Amino acid sequence: MLDRARCAHGKKPQWGTHMTLKIRLIIALGMLTTIIVSLMGASYLMLSTSRGYTDMLVSDHLRPVTNLKSVADAYAVAIVDNVHKARAGTVTWDEAVKVLADAEQLIEQSWSQSPTQNSMSHCNALRCVW
Image (cartoon, rainbow, N blue to C red; front, top):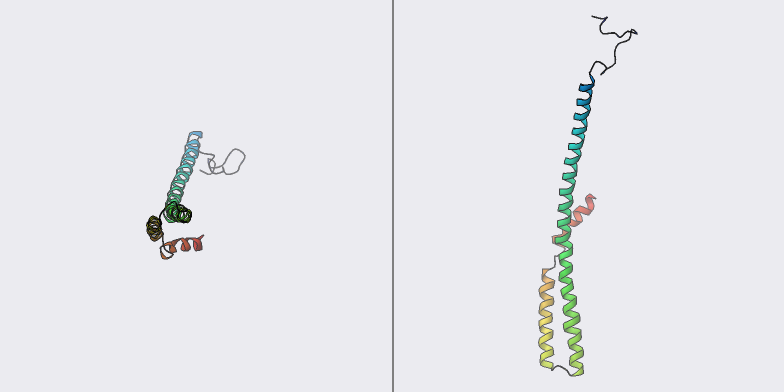
């Protein structure tokens, strides 16, 4: 039995030398497949996490910018232009007051839709984690 466990030069055979080429190729292919599948799974998890952060970014930071844009437009177009027109006499004072009231209502509505500091506390928590 010892004679069969030793090679012709008297040393013990190393691990894997008794396997055929077919078995070695199957093991190598299996290991590569395992690595590729695990990398694909990790990529999927990272993409789903990134998607969650992107959705949070859009809902918490970009949508309020559109509300602020409507506030800025209401101020610039309705209030400033209306004041100039009223001063020049192209609109009556009653029309100017009505346009100002409408602009103030639009600004109040847009401002109330923007998130408060308390609703963005999860952003501060994320900054601490990163």
